[in-house]
Length: 549
View 1 (cartoon, one colour):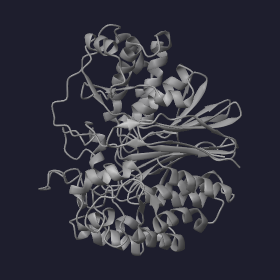
View 2: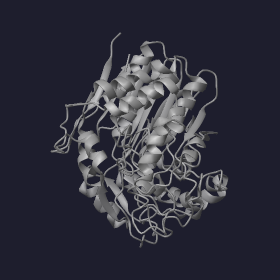
View 3: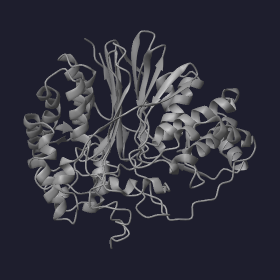
View 4: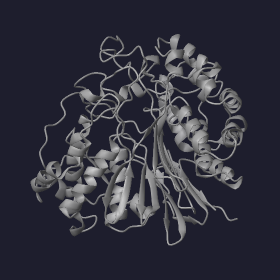
């Protein structure tokens, strides 16, 4: 069996990005943040694992290789189609602890209590998600599926540039335990290529191998988590952990250009916003514009601006009635299309409240096989290394997911997003998210699985990739690499894709009233099926790997 890889290396000192190349295979294809995670999935596939076994192995290994965005102390969403079953969606998002309430963060003396420290931590759902998926749909024994993650933690894995960059940037936020975990004995940073071993985390994973997820939610690992948080002022209890439940949801679907798109419903805002944007594209007939022209980008900006408008109306469906039908209705969208102007940007009230630098600390992976099955999952700690709290005994990085709630009414969260009342803090509630794992079906078969990390820029990253693939007919690699724009309604600001736009295009957009600022874009990971071959691609804007056989 021949194994093909596609690796892009981001050189931190120069900012150079190696251009990704398409990769193809016949039996299975995986696209993820690093080669170690891809290898884990392929190892399980070779041992006879099914789609879910492979995907869970990738997710568990990412918890080792990516403690800054995929730790067991986080949560996420997964969407998949396996066998003859319909597309299924699992929500293993974190939930607010019982002790929290709408005014919880207004009562804290620490202004950034929802972002840094023990009070920022929501009840993790990551392990519950992987355990549920394997229990319901896995084929191999659990001990086989988790073994690649144990090996990565115990034997070590070669560090990649993003790991070194993120640990260095977050170093001031760590206490002694975090520093001891992610730096050398003299507090010096590791270098790319060095072997990283995590013996304490390996011990936790071995316990999970023996006792399952219950050890995290009811046993020693959970007790270590609660004790670690309590000594730092946190409020999560063993009762919070024991009461955590994953949630099965129905996918949000929309038909577009002869395909059926399966997207995340709330508590993700991504599916609703992307569906609205695709419908606006169709109504506005954007295919009649010249590809990659100033005119096309003008309309893409306007479409995104309008699609994001309804985001603040969304929230956890167990606590909030979401007006999804209204936001995707012709009655709501048609007047927007009529209001589009060829030569002038729609003027919006600029955001006056304080905004914060966006984090991009999420990760995504996609899997597809020759059986027409596919898996798409986005997982997160929210910010880089989440709350910056690392548990004392087992060294698990914990999320700062509480900042995804409306913690301070009228203020933007760390992603610059204004949150609505439907997203206020309530015990047991899941915060609104931008994570957007997506599957695309044609003629009854999955032809594309994709998603991205990057806060609200996830939504625009996935949207742009779908637009280039479905409207412009580009292959998945070209669709991912194409330059993009980002607009999230508020603030009224267009983020352009670094320095990838011609001055003439930018000048024309400015003439039309767009407030332009260069910035980073979400990193899309995708796999697909075309002409009897499986394809894998990832974003050359950052590190990644795609491999299959």
